[in-house]
Length: 440
Image (cartoon, rainbow, N blue to C red):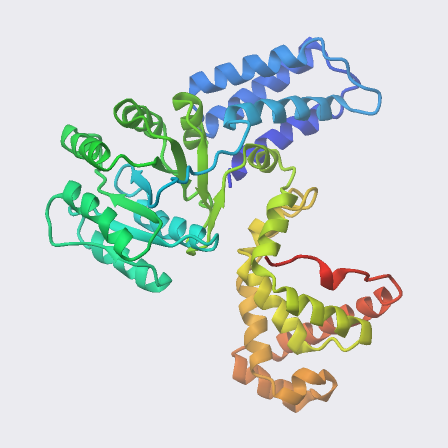
């Protein structure tokens, strides 16, 4: 997520750490590098100008505390200004007093509205809501079928009709949601390859007819400066309530998408961080600023653990650790829970001080799949007692898992090292491990 920008900023801060104090000269040099980094990340030039001016005012005349280096001081200032740029506080979706809550998704074609509609429905269902998806894109080939497939995968109802009038489809969806006791309507509207009057007029009509509680502008995080222009046009016509940034997990500069908030003065509410249906995060300016500066995001990491790690399994693991009864079955189970939390590189980037060090290390997510294949090729007894695995068994497991004997040896060596480490930890108190609220 914005890796190039993070890398450039870290380089600037590293240079500053070598100075004994802040001066106009080294501040000017640092700001010049920060300005270049932001522009190369495709942040809007006016946004960059205002941001640099704000940082400069804060930095000049700033006294460096004896225990804080100039680099740390500038990081603190840039971090504070980034939070301001990104919106300072997290903004929630407004829930209607009388259901259904109506959320209207707008944006250009290809921005990821249909996929995000499914992600948002899944997000709110986990919070106890009963969503319904509305297929109001009658123009894009297979758009309605795509939304129906998403709905079937999630077991969430999708409202669609043979009508060629999107306004009528959206209007009828309100009554359909009440008939099916759904309290949240998420409407997937049509997009275009560019702004045109027909599209804008149609979306305005939908807004006037159904009076949505939330209008979310969905922007592709991989787009360039055109995203800012499009966002401004949509906001002028619809006065949307919030922004959704999709595809922020891609290899992209991403700065243009972040500029949308500064230009429209509307809050970013959600970000898409992957292709899976649960790869969606509520947007927190402070957490995003920390990630951009390579400071990690422990809070989001803990929240992922709370959502995906099974509390009962955690308690059973604690008991096994106490008895030194940790087996390959337990190891496999931990891998399964780790996979649910998302790609390894994303998880590592959330750990303060670790993400930056491992940025250039290739973290192979398919390595977990190889380990899974190896363990699945073992018998029940072998998983329970790996000491049974001799040379012939290793060759059989390698053939069954499509790997090499060396891979089996490497896995067993790593497992044995882990067991030794756990035995050393046995003397350490594990009080409360099983009582940690890992899952709500």
